[in-house]
Length: 102
Picture (cartoon, helix red, strand yellow):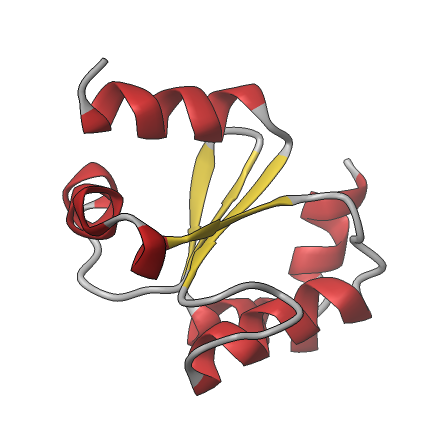
């Protein structure tokens, strides 16, 4: 299985997937920390967190998959949502909570 297929399986096979640096418990960058905190604030505890630092192939592959140059990246029901700044904006206006509840 190539990396694009692996990523596609992850994002379509799980309701919520966060590609991040580190883990929700031990984020390795500020933006990844913010993304994990936003999901926690939304009450999401059961999601797949993929540590891109553990797999350089996925780290580069996810950027190509989404055509988005930065990490973290959030996927909900197979759809790319965005990075930490977009998550913050959507959280502040209530959009993210609605997406996660649906």
